[in-house]
Amino acid sequence: MSFILVPRQGDDVQVNAWNWRPTIEFLRVEGIIDDETAELLSLNGCRVQADADLARQMAVAVEGKLQSMRPGERIRGDLSVTGAPKKVAEFHKPESIDAVDLYSATYEWLVRFKDFCEYCGGFEVF
Image (cartoon, rainbow, N blue to C red; front, side, top):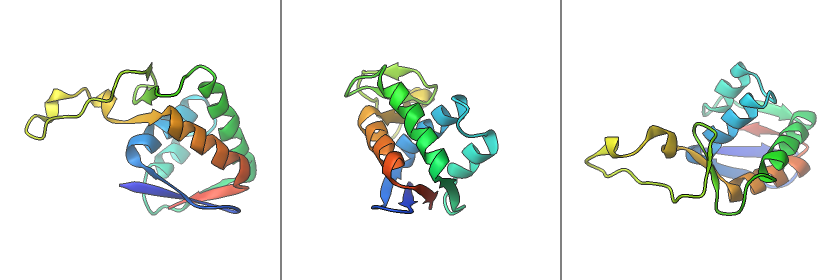
């Protein structure tokens, strides 16, 4: 499953749920978005909008987080940061992986999202 971020200006950005959900959780915990907005942003087809001001706030929050991270690291589902390689569940043993590790926003994705939020002028999520 993926999400498409459609900006008011510039190019669309597509992100998979594995990166998007921890990004949304980070923004919720930081107080940038409320619980309801976080839930709507996590669903496809709701067409949730972030105005230019909210997008700038997102960029600032992500920039702050990036300052404590390095390339190759990722924010896991519980918002812990790790540089360990992402584990992949065996097809016949889905319990072989910690659920927290399934979703993780990479440093590289966060840089791309921050840059997008800085220039987009606001965006809508599809």
